[in-house]
Length: 184
Image (cartoon, rainbow, N blue to C red; front, side, top):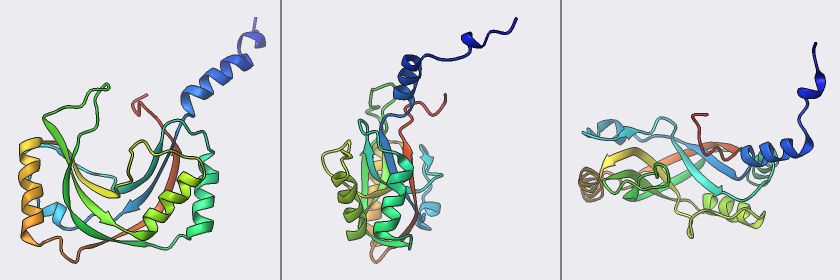
């Protein structure tokens, strides 16, 4: 016999699940990938297949992502944002199971944009707290690169002048709740 009572979750169960799945806010904007990334021949690492700039990664906030997106679009519009590339850098690789791999790094292009900084401040003023002390707008070119190889690539990019006058276009805001394990 079919029993509806066993199918309905208690309100307490619903809240526990909602807390696990809807915690934190992640806001980003899509970014054009520069041609130089295609010319880099790396022996390690993986190219970024979804180029974007993280505007805020707020682990404890619980704002509605649709409201955040709407507020950004109303306040700043939807036109492209031009960002000046101010250099290449090596950032730590993303942690695996809470541990950073000391042998791996990400190769990024550091960006300068007053509008991206204004959007970040706007999000902070809405109560979102960024996971890093400082906002450092950047586009990741490659993830999980051998640290020594990353050092060489970054040094070459900064020394050759290839980044001078390089401007990237950003558009397409995204606002989501944070998903810790994308594989689930």
